[in-house]
Amino acid sequence: MNYEILLKEHALKVTPQRVGILSLMDKAGHISVEDLYTKISRQFPSISLATLYKNIHSMLKNDLIKEVKAANMKSKYELNKAPHAHLLCEECGEFKDFPLDINSLLENAVKQSHYKMHESSIIFSGICPACQKS
Amino acid sequence: MNYEILLKEHALKVTPQRVGILSLMDKAGHISVEDLYTKISRQFPSISLATLYKNIHSMLKNDLIKEVKAANMKSKYELNKAPHAHLLCEECGEFKDFPLDINSLLENAVKQSHYKMHESSIIFSGICPACQKS
DNA sequence: GTACTAAAGGATAATTATTTTCCTTTAAGA
DNA sequence: TCTTAAAGGAAAATAATTATCCTTTAGTAC
Figure: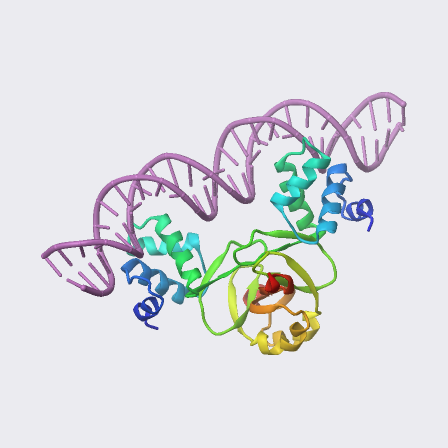
């Protein structure tokens, strides 16, 4: 994935910090502000938390990334990809993408609500296979 | 709904503040800490925010209530009722219950993940009929 | 009813998370 | 290069949540 092009497409300046943030999100899958700051700080020791927050906001606004929230969890952020649900492990706190085109699946069910749908967030939470064993 | 019995069932002391909190949540459907504090303060002018937070936590732990989180929104709380999805209006920020037994609907899809499912959170967001008109 | 005790409430301080401010630096385009 | 609007960084300010500590009260036994 080419982060420079992605940024330019949304009229956001291409800065090394932004490329780093996108790259880390891409690699992590789902990452909290705290963890992201720890990691990005290794690449840019002087980066400010304010810079991170500002970029998260501008990326959210431009739909480059998505916020994933669940009960008991800090917000996590992911690159905006194809629609999918999330599996959340309540033990280790990790999200896992779960391919599921919920929109088509539930289209009919939601249709009767007369809402103009924009997006859906679906999180199934429980215990992942690994945590079930330990 | 009898809040006293609900509290006793979970070995929580029945205090006027708790009954008030549950009653307000029940009436509101989905309510933020801020709004809840405004309302409960009318009944108990000297109630402390700390008391509200403590009670929210103990009620969450005992599954009396549920936290509902969505992007761009503060957490809201609701009485724990039958499984349902949520419709979130991005315009007015209101949640609306959407009867949908997602568990049975998606049972098969999730089964292959080998997670031990505990619960699911589903939020469809868009613009509600009322906001579409204004 | 009275006494006892663990739990709950309230005030406040402390902590954590997020946003704002303000000044410096830099990417992008002329 | 030169210009400038946008972005970065440091620090202060604000907002949200949690912890502390002392007082009050619900629940239980008598």
